[in-house]
Length: 537
Image (cartoon, rainbow, N blue to C red):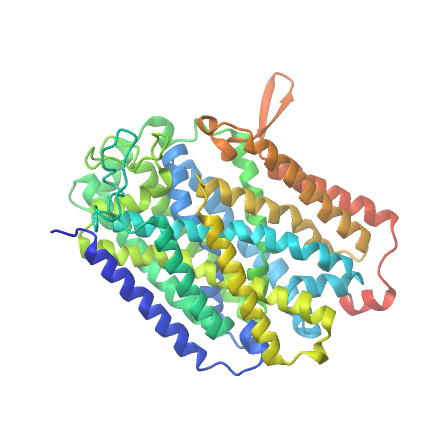
């Protein structure tokens, strides 16, 4: 075939076109109100809430990032993040999500900032949270944009070698990427498609698209797992292939022997970040009733297993003795294996061209199902918490607020795309630092919902402690050389007797925000009694 990547490209374009059609169709159901654009008029039922919430938490971090980290660290990555995420996320939905939904529906909130402002009688907390939430969401967006561009490039390799050459350090073609649609172009197309259906459909279009995409990537993810296992294992039957592939793994990749026990348990804190994700908060607001949360709470852990388990195993298998030597694994400019492209590389080389095209669509579905919610939530925060709050709701019509939301969404998409053109070496490391920042803010939402003693000064100081500690530790992480793991390899070491304990930066961030919030709240004035009566009847 003269253009090996052409069938995959055609299928990807057909899928993106179908997504556009679905998004534009859902926009026909748009009721023209601000509430419908931002929270779908609180009309989303249990199944679509489950699919949209799960889809928005599954990013390139969960697929591309998990397989990349499993390639580096082994199958212990699953226990480190996936199993804990399933349990912790459901607990957050139950303990935080239902409570937030009840309070927000009663008082008409759409964003976290609206809730915190009134809960604490403080305008300053809104001004403080706005740049912090936007600043933490943008790296989250980068995970998807970078991952999506890399997937398209790897899965269309060979399409146009003369037009899109990719060479190794010695000047020979990098067969894993050579001739594929450039990552910058793939990322641009993804941003454009997501922008169109979010722009026109708002939350209703986003929810419909997320439901469709979640079904796509879950079904195709299972197919990917079975096909790659059959090709690499070379045995008769799925079980025999899994046994053969398991036996082919190096001992250190098949166990947690090289994983620090303290680091392993530190990762249990990362999933707490979901309690402060602004896009998840906005999805909670779409629920029709509190009972709508039952299905997501029960099935979310199962869905995480279905998605993470295959990705982690595939990444680990790439280190085993059954991994074919030709074509060679994709390489970075520094001459090391580009682990971010392991999953799309195996999909492209171990499946047929038609199937790999469909599997490419599945990978993109997972990546794009989180981008749309994040773009929409940032636009909503800007419209509600900055423009409308300071100009006055009575002076801005619903249609004008929808327009402002859309304009800011366009601006954020443009900024995210430009930032994605930089050299990000690890999607996994970028995700961990992003989630660590949200985890550091988690004590603030828990205290606001469950502790009458939280003061505005306590919350503000806790937020400042979280962001200052995040910034200082991130700066030190940037100093770690790439060959020593770069940003993702930065850990804290604590001496306990003769033992040296490794800790993730998130431990320091969480402790600093928690202790500061409680200590300052104990010695500063509480909100007015009428405010407390409103939130603690």
